[in-house]
Image 1: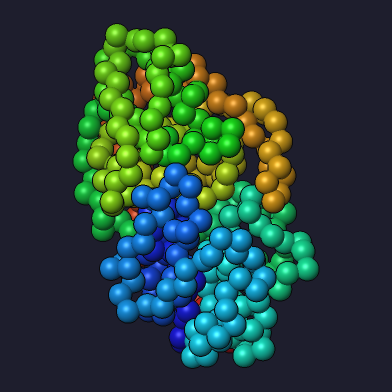
Image 2 (image 1 turned 120 degrees about the horizontal axis):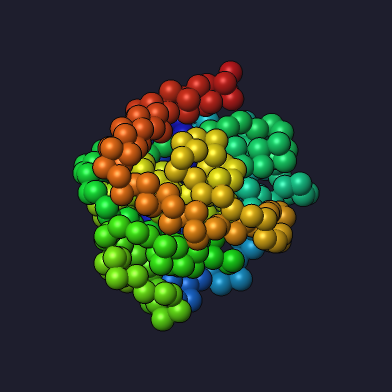
Length: 345
């Protein structure tokens, strides 16, 4: 079975997904270089072709179109000797799906629901692979739940009692990672704790109420290796909306319990005692309409306070390690192989 992957080789989430797939599933890759589309994200979009040795690169041009954006000869050359084409979020040029169908090549698009281009008149893949159960019923058929595995070999789980880490990244619209709610929650923490906030842009803390019990450390910049962000303790990411959350998966991969919000898809796979209530806030119009929820800072702090009990923390680490095994590449790889086999059967 010959697999072709449309990949990214940068430090975006799609780059991390691509690298994990490439390292665990024998395939050839067409690497999409988005560097010319950068504004302030030049470091994030920097190409790391050492992660995809010997693979073909296509550099997207300003004004790129999702139909007719990649030269025909590049697409035809790439798909001529594969059985399945796998893409994440977008194929970058939907004509490649039509080309594959004409050549008898099956296509899989592992979607992110808020950026899903269907229903539309665009060429439709043979399978839509949902990385989470978020809005699963709203995804058109044919579809399958196909979670994104974590490369657990990158992590060495380490216990750090009363240490909490939050990744703000580059804040998405409506503060998707709940950074503001997390900052506001710190005033209600009633034990001495260390709090680390990682961000890719400078953050201001002038608006938050200072708590003398909280030793707050803020780091700024893009780490070369994403797994350097997960150094033990408890990961806090009170997400307001969204399906696949790589930082959440990666934290579990590092054996870290995760405090998040009691909304889909978090409440489908994380223990309920780790999840803070969140109330409906608004509708976000992306390519699809999605609901946005507002986390309760006091509830976030209440759960942080629970984690300041050593027995509670130790039991939570045990649960995180069990979930870690379930979402590893070793555990989920057979699901990918079966998906491929069923598609070409």
